[in-house]
Amino acid sequence: MAQATTEGTFAAAQPAPRLLRRGTRWGEMLVKGVMAAAALISVATTIGIVVALLTPAIDFFREISIIDFLTGTRWAPLFEPAGFGVLPLLTGTFVVTMWAMVIALPFGLGSAIYLSEYARPRVRKVLKPALEVLEGIPTVVYGFFALLFFTPLLQGIGVPLQVFNPLSAGIVMGIMIIPTVASVSEDAMHAVPQDLRAGAYGLGASRLQVATRIVVPAAISGIIAGFVLGISRAIGETVIVLIAAGNLARITFDPTKAIQTMTAFIASTGQGDVPTGSIEYKTIFSVGLTLFVITLAINIISIRLVRKYREVYE
Amino acid sequence: MSDATAPLTAAGVDRTRIRRGRAFHAFLLFSVAIGFVLLITLLVDVAIDGIPQLTWHFLTSAPSTLPERAGLRVAILGSIFLGLLLIAFTVPIGVATAIYLEEYANRERWYNKALEVNIQNLAAVPSIVYGILGLAFLVRGLEMGRVLLAGALILTLLVLPTVIVASREAIRAVPDGIRQGSLALGATQWQTIWRQVLPAAIPGIATGSILALARAIGETAPLLLVGALTFVSFNPTLLGPFTAIPIQIFQWVSRPQAEFKLLAAGAIIVLLIILLAMNSFAVWLRNRHTREY
Image (cartoon, rainbow over all chains, first blue to last red; front, side, top):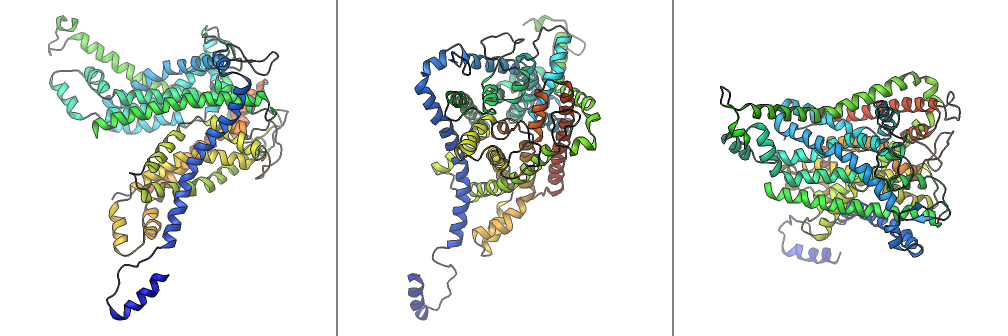
């Protein structure tokens, strides 16, 4: 405000009109501050997640050594004597994820190649959003379908499945993830310059050769990023495995027998009324931390890969 | 390569090559089709079990331990309340964050770059982890208990990255000429954003927000940790226990009796109809208001 009075004294001597208002616009500053504060909420979320996971997990690792946790082969936190080896949950997650990927990777890539290289523009324009409908179906619906339709169907054709099994859950999840893999891969293929294709056709290559030997290699980092994103989604998926893959933590790679994944353990223990501060309560967070670290690592790899392919064609 | 020695057709192209091309084409078509086959099978399966369940009684009754009495009213109301709270929370925060990143932030600064990476990472955090966050801080930490507000807050954090990304895209699509014109006429930066940029970006923001909301309405995992009470027979309140349609489906699927599984199919139809309506509305909005600059 001191500025205003000095301006006043000069005004008599210099009558030229001022076009720019000097001084701080407090209102503008305030608005910018509010917007920045809103942006900080997402930072707070990340910090909140890390704190929420780490604090009880550190407590947990005071009681159970981290080596026993990571290498133990028996997961039975609610039983006597209790076992706190996370390996059964890790293998459970691995088996489901692997079967999901057996479906999602080839067919996701196939869909991407079809959309990018084979489909006419009009067909592509209809197919792409239609495929994404698969992603919009809630996972609880897929869980219902896997348990009550797909497992009986497979049993009907002679696959010796238990009622809860990772095979059926994994396959249904894999089909759900096809659009995720397809969409990221297709974006990468779409970014491959037309000249490369024209060059190959000019040398007499067939459409198959152009797709598999020119476009796919040129878009490979984007395709891998799509794969990685699909894997990350499969690892984090909860409800399908909770409903259809079972709740029995054990080390087995046989996809016909019930298992328990990390996510299913968290969900089934967390919905109950385990007392706050008990060791059972803390297991939710130690497993949650394991899951978070794995998906974070995978996601960082994926972001790197996407950035790498972006650098090539922009 | 064996291709070179294969017999040539009149056109000068060898047959193996054609055959391989066809086989590959068939594989690609199968890749695209498998998803649709699953989708159609799923819909037919659910429809057969679920449509007979859709009675007025089913839609308006409270849950019950007896399948013939159980209804979906409490879950439908829970999902509607969650949806309204979500709009109230996510849209202002999401749009404000998007405005900050697009209009104010200096992208060269490390903290703004970190902010962007952070939002990208949040979008990939498994939804169950958000449930853990809610369990630790809201349900147990603040001792809110498993209440509707806690569920809404956690779903808000879950879909916020999606809303931010969609709003940023909508704001970025507003041409710079509009901003510069406004600034040249003497408007302040905020006046420019509020009166020019935002009105032009609203259709895009609304479309993105509705799609994000539809995703949240179908979400089950985080609510299992924050909300899922086994049995709520009264209408939800802000600070009271609640249930939502996906949770109700999950509970019915998990019961051993076959009657409850049929009820689950009925509830799935209701959920899918709600989601279809929301998605169609979003697409309609986008098509109607898409402006070419």
